[in-house]
Amino acid sequence: MHTILIISERDSEIAELKSELSKKNSVVVKNRAQAGLDYLKKAEKLPSLTLLDLDLNSMKGTDVLSWIKDNIKTREHPVMVISEKNNPSFELQTYVLGAVDFQSRPFAVATLVRKIDIHLKMIDKTNSLEMQNSMLAGNSSMLQNAVTMSMQNVISMQQFIVGIMTSLITRKDGFTGIHSMRVGRLMQILMQEMLNQKLLYLEPEDQNIIILGSQLFDMGKIGVPDEVLSKVGKYTDEEFTIMKCHTLYAAEAIQNFSYLLPNNNFVMYTYHMCRSHHERWDGKGYPDGLSGENIPLLARMVSICDVYDALVSERPYKTPLSHGHACDIIQEGRGVQFDPTIVDIFSRVHIQFQAASKGG
Image (tube, rainbow, N blue to C red):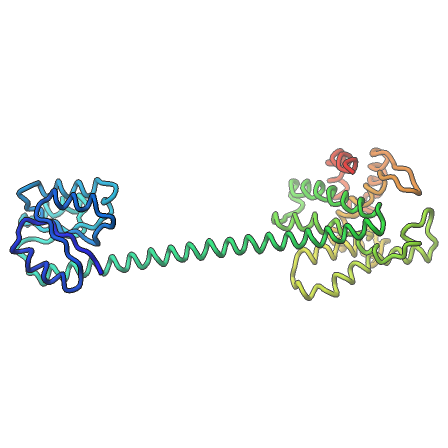
């Protein structure tokens, strides 16, 4: 039910109007201007509409309208005015002051009631739209929160998987586990420079999952027998054939379960890095003998990070090479083992590689 405030000093005229309006609404009548203003000041909830008689004796009607529209509490409150001054310039003045409608005297009560009815229906529609917008905004906020939480859960799950696999790799072979984590740091450096040079275009979320996935590039070594994985010295042809299978072990494991996450970038990126990081630019790598740009880009990137860190790291069977020596070897592999463009990018950030590999 709507509440209508009538501010008028014409009791007889207002009595009939109040009688009609009260059939559907609550009607409050104030027969002095100040009493009407006091009511608006003190009301916890403003009425739906105020019907203001401008032909007041106690106060100038336009001053009452101005006060209502200048007050912070009531400036948006709809006010319909009545007056004997039936001329276009005065009517326009009331609209300029903020009135929503103008009714001249004399008037038929039924006509004025109909006009008020129309305004109340407009108010109902406005309130309904505002409520719907508020609900939509709330739903949108809830949806956004749900999406954010879902994305956070996905990222946490990816980190969980990478953490478990890295831990298992480290338990199987401590050198491989530490090496994998360092390769992740080197991939971040290389990727950022490629983004800076406009050689790579990735969404931020893809950048994060590439760094995570790159730490799994050697996870297939879990399937390599200990006597081969931990061997000190040169592999026999048979042992090397077994070692090369680590690329396929990882790729096949990912492929076998990829149906659970169709079209998932983390799965796709990790698959390429695991399977193809030992391919060579000249086509003499393994397991598929891919060459040039047929090798997935991320695998070409991992390849340089893998080789650099292996060269400068200490192993039971080798002493670490100096940073300069490792850089020379990578330069020698430009266009042979490695993508020439990525070698050039490496040359721009090799000092950062040196710092990252020393970080343990």
